[in-house]
Image (cartoon, rainbow, N blue to C red; front, top):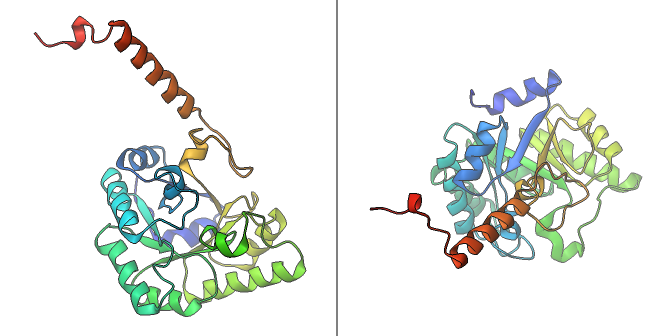
Length: 264
C-alpha cells in the first residue's frame, strides 16, 4: 500500500473519499492497522488511559509519547504517523513547542503532529513554516478536562457553534492540513466540513466529516466502557481473558506443557 501524504488528503476529500484514522501505541498495533488499510495512525495521548492506567491524559509526558511513537513507527515503517503532542509540551512558548515537535519527527519518525485547541494559529503557522505538518483538534479537548470539568459535547447553541467554525477557519488559514472534530453535534460537524477546504476528521461528530478517527481499544472491545461515539468491531478483550484463563487452567492441571511443547 502506497504511503498517504499530506498533499493527498485534500484531493481525497474533494473526491469524496473518506479518510480512516485509528490510534496505536505499539508496533503490533500499528502493523495490524497498516495491514488493514488504515490511512493515518495517531499515536494518541489517550494511550495514557488505555495502556498506562491513568484516569486522564494529563500525566502523559513527552518522553512517554516518544517511546510509544518509536514503536509505532517500527511496526509500520510506511504508514502516515501522527504524533499527539502531550499536555504542556507546546503551551509554554513557541520555541519549546518547535523543539518538542521537532523531536517527534526526528527521534520518533512521525510525519506530523496534532495540537489541541484553536487559540494559537501563530504556533501552527510557525510549525508549518518549519516543515512540521500540523493536524488541528477542536471540540472536546481531553487535555483541558481540569478546566472544563467533564467530557461533554461541545458547540451546542449558535454562539458556541460560531466560535468553533471561526477557530476551524483560523486553523486552516494558519496551514493545518486537517482538523479533528471531537464530540460536536453532527449538524455542526457538517457545517465545519462545508466551511473548510481541508479535511475534517470526526470522532463523535457525525458522518458528514471527511473521515473518522477512533481509539483502537474501543473498536476492539478491550476497554470496559464503550463511549457513545465508538462501536465495538471486535471483542478482543474477552478473547484475551478467555485465552489467559485456559492457559492458567492447563498449567494448574498439568496438561501444559504437553510433549509437543517440550524439547528433548
